[in-house]
Amino acid sequence: MNAPVKQTFLEFEQSVAELETKIEELRFVQSDSAVDISEEIDRLRSKTESQLKDIYAKLTPWQIAQVARHPQRPYTLDYIGLIFTDFYELHGDRSFADDPAIVGGIARFQGQSVMVIGHQKGR
Image (cartoon, rainbow, N blue to C red; front, side, top):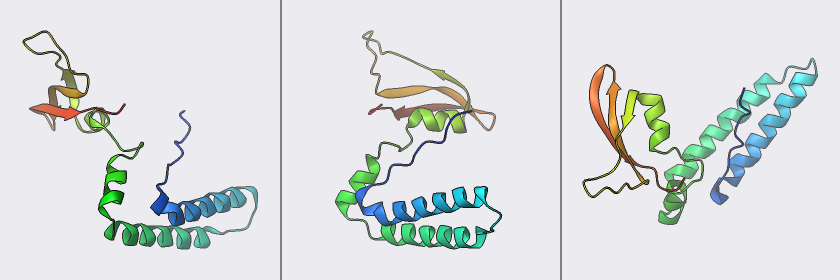
């Protein structure tokens, strides 16, 4: 079984990161004791969601760029694996070259044959 990936927070998300750390600490404490602190965990989870909505409602252009470049942002191949079936990647062009940053191929979406094209740059 794969270990959960530690979430990377951006600078403007630090208040959310602190809340997530508190939630993880409370989960650890709850698993080692008979005390039920699930209400506190739920309250912190709700506060986290509220803070995320507030933060993302007021992003500056630079913060939007940071989100777009986030190291844990999903890429085309991530989406293809989750959305499509029977993906067959096509490679190359008529000049016998291949751009590894561009992903394209034939797949099935809900039984329908489709063409998928996206970029995989950055990984």
